[in-house]
Structures are given as structure tokens and as C-alpha cells.
Amino acid sequence: MPQHKSCEKRMRQSRKQNQYNRAVKSSLKTATKKFQAATPEDAEAAYRKASSELDLAAKKGVIPRQRADRKKSRLAKQLNKAKAAA
Image (cartoon, rainbow, N blue to C red):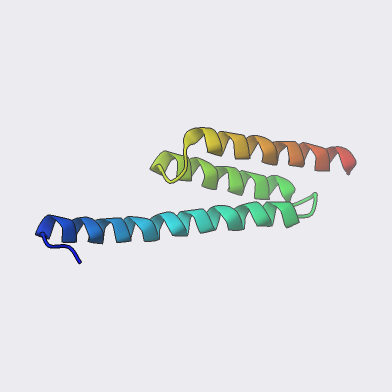
């Protein structure tokens, strides 16, 4: 256990931030899975939702900007492939 007040505060802050980061990452995974499970008609809306979630996570610093861009690019590839097949 921490011996200083500042250490106690830092532990409280990091615990709170960890919970927030976990929630955001969980919503990212959910949005990505929903996109991958979507029908070709619903894929466009699911892509926009997932893309928005990724942008928000990057903006808040939960994930790096480059990772968000890479994941969005890969999702867009899947969307285009699904459109071409349909």
C-alpha cells in the first residue's frame, strides 16, 4: 500500500483511468465484431459506427492515432470487398 498521500491519489486516478480505457476498448471490439457480422446492406452503417468509435478512442488517447487509422483502413477494405461480392 502507498505510504504517501500523493501515491494514494495516483492509485485512485490510475484505477479510474484504467476502467475508462477498458470500457472504450471493449466498445471498440464490440463495434468491430458487429461490423464483421453485418449483412452487406447493414455493413455501411456498421462501418461508420466502428470508424467513429476508433476516432473517439484515438482522440481521447486510449489508442494511438496510427493504430486507429490502420484498423479503419482494414475495415474499409473488408467493406469494399463485401460490396464487390454483392
